[in-house]
Length: 255
Image (spheres, one colour):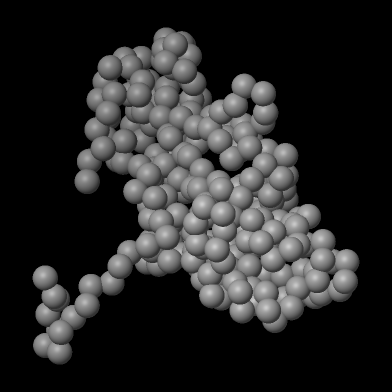
């Protein structure tokens, strides 16, 4: 499928600069198309096929980009904020230019796996409770946890404004003053995991998201680190958010 666009838009889409900066790059003879110098920003190129280079270095075009980040505490899950650092501030211009946005949110003090994508439809499917995509968190709380809490999570906790969907609670350790557990939810309303624990009489003192669906946080990523998803990770995410089509005994699909 052809992605034809103006050369100046192509360069801006790849984070090479603002529109005025891109014009300067072209005027300075720093851009080439298929091996030939090009100064006309209005020239249309096939983004998926043209060999566009800046200062002799080939640029890599992708229609969509998908990232995982190890979100550090103290950073907002937002596109921009006048007073606080956001997750997009941790990325190079390329990803903001091509439209990457966070998939769902992590609280400011919550760490761990955050996905970002320029494919809004995929992002919506990942966070939709209807798709039942597991999100696994490691939680540390300021009191003990027991089997009664495991059962309560599994039944679905009634919070002040909604009833949470059934969740899985796996206790890692428990002592009178502190416990650690893995919590798996399939929805992500405001402060939901913290509120679920609070409803059981304990408060979260540390929270980290470990995985989303089939994609775990890469242990090689330091806080604030990021990388693009591998093809296998992306395919697994797409598969887990795409409903299967039932077939009848003869192999035909049901309309």
